[in-house]
Length: 259
Image 1 (cartoon, helix red, strand yellow):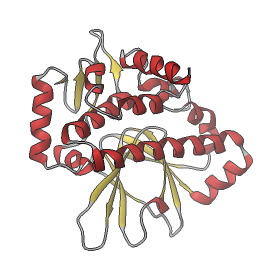
Image 2 (cartoon, helix red, strand yellow; image 1 turned 60 degrees about the vertical axis):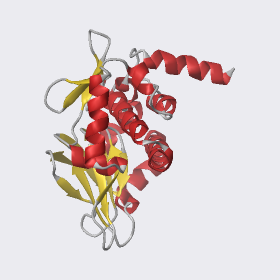
Image 3 (cartoon, one colour; image 1 turned 90 degrees about the vertical axis):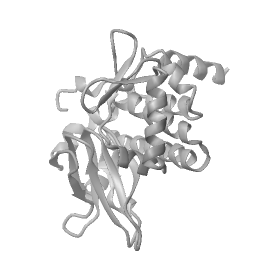
Image 4 (tube, one colour; image 1 turned 135 degrees about the vertical axis):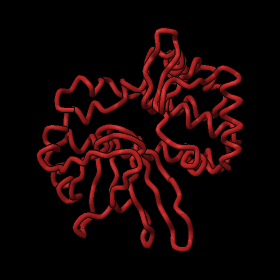
């Protein structure tokens, strides 16, 4: 019975009636007023790097707007895009491996709250709503990272690209009058290929095939349109998982006046 319920919900969301606006941070709305008093807001621009360490102590970052990537450089290697972070996501500076260089890099215009992790821990200890927000955010991110690891290890090239596009559509997409989904495409080809473990030329060929098939089309600068999310989802083994992860929210944070 449980499986049937989940299938029904997933199919409804594939139809485009329930998109990312429902999953962008109910808990963040509830906790934002308290967190705001202890956070330093950082406005970001495309390509801006935010250092993970601040004044020598462990730091927490809360994504308020936009999309950022976590980029890591291990000793003797080149940098690697290891995670995408969306509105409501939380990052601790200790998430970067020891002896590696790590940075948050903004994919476009956005805003990040920076806080000392000790302040976050104290607030969470005294406020169940804040504790729930941190717990839910980190659980959500861990699930997405597990999907990304599975994609890199087991998915073919087209499946990886489809999974990436579905996540962007679910996280940043808005329904169009024609039944499609317009969503942000803030990354350049090199960053997408790096994140997906692909050669940039391979990525270009796959994107060309998707455009030729009519599944995606350009909209305006840094945006794209998925004409049929159901058809795109059929290309990714992770589609249903991503839909479930991004469909848990009950409210749109845009309705929260403090955001």
